[in-house]
Image (cartoon, rainbow, N blue to C red):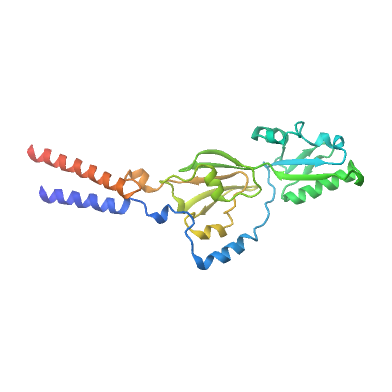
Length: 265
């Protein structure tokens, strides 16, 4: 019986040693490598502008010397921009339909699929001058994505998120969602990205500084970020040394008590 008892204790020790506390390397963001850092930053400066896809929501404003002339293009409460909410942007914005078009007053349907924000602005300015305004009106058009909307699932704040910026990194997206939990697998964060032909799945290691050179470091509208749990969560051993120690003590107590009960029978 003593031999069996030692075997059980040894088995518990082996299991705890391999699957207990989580290494700090697995829960530390963007661990640096000084040799690669300069080249990574240079790569990021060459990032290509985002090209509009179906389902995107655009915010378009038209200004002119005579604001009454452009009233139909702008929201009714244009003067009170501080009152902007996600709901207001939804109702006042221009959604890109499945064919890549938006419906603009007087201009009708305008195709914007695959265009950058700058290219859409130039196209609308040109169409307005050709069909509605004269050069003397001095129109000024602004076109922006109405925030970067994305979804988070798993060991991260779950739900739909929105950030009102032109560019959003995955680090900003994670922080906005509340961060990755201590049980989240930061080395294999999944990004499910929408394309006209369907969805594609990518993986990024947020513990490695090289992540900032990844083409997926900047998220895009309608991305889904999925963080799967580490094995420690399913096994229940804890993520820290103290938690693993407590679990070990509990298991040893249970085993010892069980053996003592059986040996007395």
